[in-house]
Each structure stands twice: as structure tokens, then as C-alpha cells.
Length: 440
Image 1 (cartoon, rainbow, N blue to C red):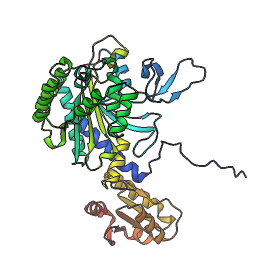
Image 2: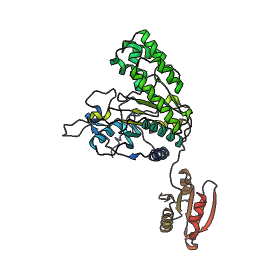
Image 3: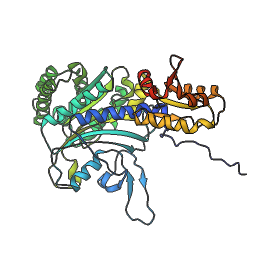
Image 4: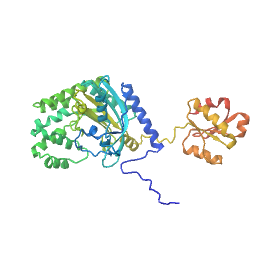
């Protein structure tokens, strides 16, 4: 017999979710889905593998993507790195879709990033997007979706930070650097939560070749304290010479009014000029959500407006705005905050036959339970002793045990044990469903 066993080890950046983790994860997913659907979003599913050119647009990306190879195929394939680019492909391939098109999608994505706490190479994203409208009401509604989702997930201490890329794109005129450098400047600004200011300063000097005065102005700009209308009025005076920035300021002013009308609590959102968002396709409003009790874990729900993304596939002028919640990072954060209830099973009742002569009756009982919408299972293990069976039920945290033996079958009874209270009662078989419902 061979002893050359393979070590059961995962690749770095990937993880398994055992039932105690996966059950609360599924609850999170269901909660998000319910909120998204309450806003009128409809589900969409796209393949995990795309043509590489679909994902990259034929350009080199700042991130490492996972390639997929099909023997004999000349086409380059890759695993999707987000759900937004595949959405753009779907919209382009289906021009008759009614617009605005409000879709949600949950799916795994893959990025070759350096694994760290709350960041994996395979992770689950849950997106909501509105395609086919330039209305700022759509931007506002995405923020409202983010707010309602966090509340529904039981999180109270969170902050949605808003900015506008038009303001950031106006920095070149305000500060006085070549606008071709804007993307590199924003890329460095986006690292503000991960690196110290001296580190960012060195990047501005070495990589973008900015002067000390220009860097000083950038620091002053991103150091403006978050706020709302008063902040925007201040920036309006500061950047009065930049037409593009003024457009972005005007958009944020309108969104602040919309959010009040939508009932988004003032304490859970702010305008923060340092929010840049890394992806280059954002063109207007950008937003990210942090947990104020755990800011170090980074943004867990973010997105923005992307007016030109569909142009990769079509000349059509189709705008979009959306946000994505990283389920895995959110789960890690909730676990750190002690807000995850570890549940080992969804089973409410386990039927324990005392011996093999009770198997058929046990199956009848479990069938009745399921027909009454009570999740139930029969003990299928090899243990002979009743004590071992009860220990099994207790370890799985099943609330109720139904015990059936030869005497119970003769008398048409069952023994019902409330596992939490450690109380056991004898009930006629005709009435046992009602009694179990009282307990659970």
C-alpha cells in the first residue's frame, strides 16, 4: 500500500469555509440579496472564464490576473478579476435590454495579489449596478443601497466616504502639473491608508517628478477634513479656476440633497477628498465604506460611476454606476468584531433510533417533520450507545432530539428532548409536531 500521500494544503491566498463559517456567510449573502431586490435590482450570472482581451482591453493591467488555458485553443483566456467588466460585455452583447438596467450579481473573482488579512486571491464579490442612465439619482441610490445593506447586516458603526473623480482630475490645473500625470498622482493618493505620508511624498518625487510646492498642495488638499456642504463650498472657492473640478463639486452637492431625501443617516456618510479609488475607469462619483470600529481592514463596500467602460465593446454611449461588497473581507471583519454567530448546522431536530429495529419508524418521523417545514435528520452514525448519539446531537448544536425505541413504537409515543434546557418529555405521536414547534 502506497504511503506517498499528498499533503492536504491549499495554495496561498485561498481558503476553505467549514459549515460553522459557511452558514453565516450564506446568511450574509441572503441578506444582501434581499436588500438589493428591494431596490428593484435583478440577478445576472456570467462565466468565471472570459477571453483575456475582454478583461484587459488589450492593455497591460496593474494587477496580476489568472490565465486559463484550453488545449488546442489559440484564444487567450483568463479568470475574471471583477464582475463589472463582464457586465459591460453583457450589456454590449444585448443592446435590447431595457435601460436603465439594474442588476445584482454574486460570484467569485480572482486576482494575483499578495495574500494578507482579509485579502485573498480568490474572493466573493456581491455587486449592484445601474446601467444606462447619467442621472445623479442613480449614484445616490447606490449609496442608499450601501447604507441599507450595512444596516440590514447588523452593522451600525460604518462610514460611506464619497468623492468625485472630476474634482481629482482637476488637480492638475489647480496644482500645476501635466494632466498626463493625473493617473499616477491618483494612484499614489489611493495608497494613503496603506502608507505613511513620507512614503507617499517620495513616490510623488521619484515616480511623478513633482516639486516640493506641488506635493505640499496635494497634502493640503487631501488633508481637508471630511464634511458635507461646507467642505464643498470651501473646495469650490479653492478650485474656482478648474471647470472640471467645479462640475464634480456640483454633482456632489446634488447628491447630498438626494441622500437626505432617501433617508440616508448623516452620521453614516461624508465627503472625503482623499478617496480616489484605484481602478482607472471611474469617471464621476466614487465611494467606499469603512467600518469605524475596524478601519485598518480597509474598504469593504466600494464603487463609483464609470461612463466609458462599455466603450471597450461598443461605440454606444452607455453610462453606469455601481458598488461591490467583498463578502470575504466583510466576513473577516465581522468575525474580528465578534458579530458572527458560529452555527454548525441548520438542522432543528435530530431523530435518534435506539436500535436498527427503529429505523423505519425514524424515517417516517423525519419525513413528517420535513413536510411541516422543520429541518430534520436521522442519526446515521455507527454508535450503538444512546449516550454517544446524544453527544453527537449536542456537538452539532441541534436544538431538539426525538428519541424512538421499541417501547415508544408499541405505545405510539416519542421522547422529545429540549437540548438547551436538558428537559425530556413523552408525547403521543399524533401531537409531536406541535410540541416541537413550541420548543423551536
